[in-house]
Length: 355
Length: 249
Image 1 (cartoon, rainbow over the protein chains, first blue to last red):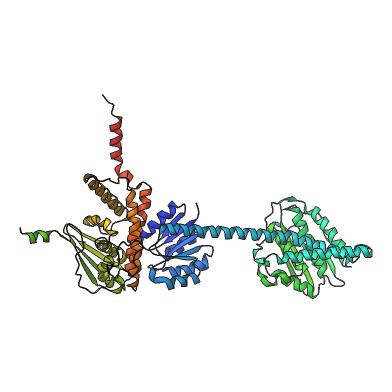
Image 2 (image 1 turned 90 degrees about the vertical axis):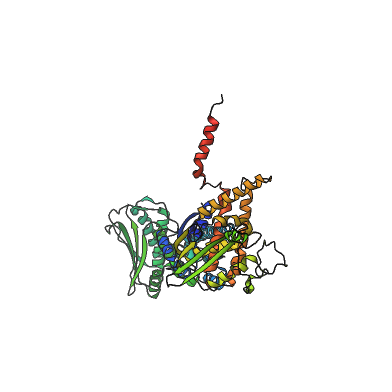
């Protein structure tokens, strides 16, 4: 079957002829007598293409076209028009119709046009999938990793994690520049509209939250120490297992840690906690006691869905990038990440489904 | 009985009456010459510009410039003028009176008009449409696609019988029937172009569109072995099979 087509015309002979010819051409077809019936059928079942007559009783084709364009944007419309209706046909193209055919219709030409339209639709859909996969891969894996590498190299180069020689510092700085160049190139290569919520859906398995949080806690402790930020872990007692893809979940929590340390103001304290009794999910909280303006800005930023940042996408700072990537990673596991700020305190709240 | 009354008896008359919800009635009397089935019209009426042969002349028109007017368009002129401001889906009650019986149907204007235009087109002396003229003798108003296909095929096969009797090569496999209808489709398109220039609303054009869509489906129906009509003749096939199975003495 090459596609699903709805034939809309008040004249039964025409409906039957088109329907029969399209069925013989391998299309799945249905018919409606006017715009009103067409809309009803579209509400019940999706169609790839609607062949829409213009002059019909009850609801004409132009009214129906408006409704279809608005309510069923993935359905393409081809208008069926008489010779005298050229200007109307052009108006229909402006209103969203993909094409128009002049009656009397040559059914061989109709089938050729339908096939070509459906081929174009399939190519567009395939290209969209490719763009989505590319965007998810670049954002969730390349950019996320490159930002973290850049952070680590920066800290190493500055001697925050141990003394380095001038030569080592020079090498580390150039490597850091390369990592930052990868981040910039990655951001420039994707359009955020293709970043579907959550990105790739991971096939999760049972993971010990105690084990993962233990490692994350050590990581945050190390980077907090390097920035002279006090860190306290309130994790105690056995936490329930969660279902997720371990590496992606661990990286998401580390990103939250990096961002939290990044916004901590002088004299701030960081605390890690987990609520094991919050319904069917486990909630992990990372609280920054004092963040200053940067924390509020980050909290504000994270409240906007990633696909809505549009032209601002390339201006996102590294902490925002990491947090968006973490948000997507947790969403892909069936969890979430939200950031709340009150006065100067900022709370990062991550949730994951219990096993 | 003298010759004059003989000629008179050979004229076939069909009366088409359209009655609309607003009380308006329009009548059209069609008179056909009994043997040739040629339309008998008053040719003195002034012919509009769109009826000239060169105006949107059909791609497959075999007529040359010595012919000033398209015969189909010239015959349709007054009918088209009558419905130039009419909407295709307007409701109407159509009564068709013939010598033998009366047909009546509540239908849309485009449907009633298509039957009428169909008669005008095939009785106009258009060399392409002429091939369908024998069907007019057994005109069936408001025919469904299936009925029209049945009449088209059976009329064509009867024609082949007469070709065979005259010593010609009959086309029992309907090879040329699909070709005839493909040519008819081209004329339907040409006529609809002309008519759309003479109409402000869509009733006239859509009437031709209906004729065209039946013609469009015919080559495909033939190509698929007339599957829809086959079951009607199952008994013929059974009789043939039992004849073949009868043991020879």
